[in-house]
Image (cartoon, rainbow over all chains, first blue to last red; front, side, top):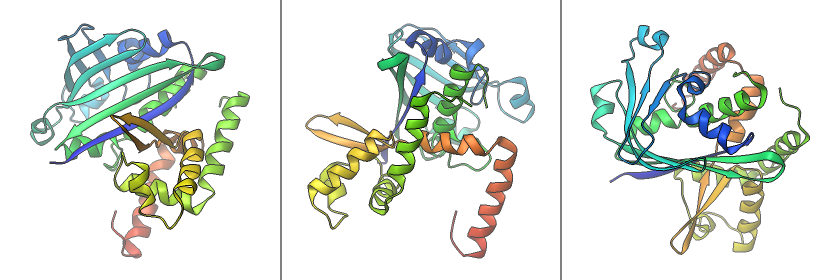
Length: 157
Length: 114
């Protein structure tokens, strides 16, 4: 059994509500990272889907790149949902992993955002989220760095 | 680029934390296997427990290590986001491809994997 947890943390000068919206609202998720269009049904048992942009679909990505089930919703502090990549049968077969977003307000209007990704027997999913796959972006570190830039400067990288 | 003073301080802390071979070694250990206890990390180093704790504290303050309680244990995780921030500051998407190609060439010629 190969069980791993990866933790990613970033400090962002923004309100907890702004960070929450940037994670959960499609008009925000299209502006940073992999530009996926988030579809959340924000209640326990609700569906999560991450849709590829038309550009990524033209490059061979399926329409739905990630799916999952919402486990815990406590806006604007905590969101937990499962996470399964769908771009091919191999990665899809690795099954669901779990992602937790924790937003904590700090001093001077700076919040910490912590993403905890728990994975079990999911080598390809792990490689993708840690940025280990060449030419496939930098995983969560890339996404969170870009999110910070977007919220603090109004434009992404 | 943001130029808040706290942001500059953050960068200083990251560079200072990285400017030490023991702390880089601790990050290497966590990169190889994440979520380790102080006892596990200590066993890899010829250093007192207190010395390792001090280095971990510097890494935590720079945001390069995030510590989590798990039952009675405190687990340490490598947080690569501050290093990614440094990367994103000077390397854009287009340069990244060229940098990656050069690194691959170097690794191939030197006989390293990855």
